[in-house]
Length: 469
Ligand code: AMP
Ligand code: GLY
Image (cartoon, rainbow, N blue to C red):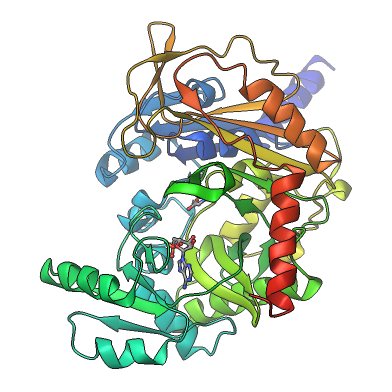
């Protein structure tokens, strides 16, 4: 009898171990904190080992182990993954993907949620992506051409009626792109910039300038099957009413129906279909399945949805929006897959077998950034979050350093505040009420997620569709 109970207990313990996953998370920002939270909120127990570039107290509080090291030191990351005995890795930022961390982990027998270096070119090379879209006849392609020098530039510019955009090839953090009308005033000015860049040996993509509303549509991809997330709109400009320099993204919102107020059903269907076609094109082109997140950056225009860019990872801040709509931990599988289920299915290639069901809620996320951001940020000064009511909003740490009990600004976007509500404008009010309570030299965009900004965007889109713009 006694041995029966013991063997039952032993069986339970074994089951508990089998029902527990060890995961390596690579990255240190708010997006990675959102990934850590989503993993920990999965139904099965997750033991998290984190490899980060700096100490993020939000991630550390969710992790069983947390080490700080260079994100470009693949050898150290692989060594840490081995020592931690992880089942798989989730790669947050683009840098390690571009450095081939997925390839190196794979050689060590550790699978990843994230594409190999060759496939990550979808983000790291503008010309790779544009050429792929053209070769596979992907809808939403734009007029573009790659150049290494000025030969042929004038005749190409003559074909473009509405101005042009200059895109350096390679990772630029979304800040290297120059748009006529925004970053240079005339064709002559643009040509001067082109000469300067070519003289530095920079290869470039030049493409037609599009007018419309931008949105992100991210899809989980196992190489063949895709699971689409709700569309999100980020806000790249630093200041209210879309003024000021481009940033990594000042805030974002998503809607309960998975669409956005300025998009039609056809726009959403089109964006999903472009992601699906790109996934298949990547597989056909490279022979290797793309496993991870395909983040399509789109623009809704007068002539339909156009592809602006691809990223090979979750967006930041968009990750905070989309990872907030998974079913609650307490609900059963009928309510839909959780984030761990998704990660495992990406690795196994079984995303098509999952039932996914996003909570019908709206989300608003805003970043508090240091005064002077993005070009001249205040650094090293403390911020105080103690007045914020964390029962109303989620707090995600980005570029902050926890030192001696203080939270110090480290120069880039500092803290993301997110709220979830059935009503978009209620979610916005919740975020606004709390983000204002951050004490210290920071600012945020109070217009993100407000009726006046969203209605003006919907109106602009309507005018574009009616060909008034
Ligand atoms: P990317 O790094 O390709 O995402 O570009 C950064 C930003 O430049 C985008 O978010 C857009 O705001 C803008 N942009 C890129 N391509 C175009 C285009 N063809 N027409 C207009 N704006 C663009
Ligand atoms: N939100 C823009 C990005 O993640 O690249």
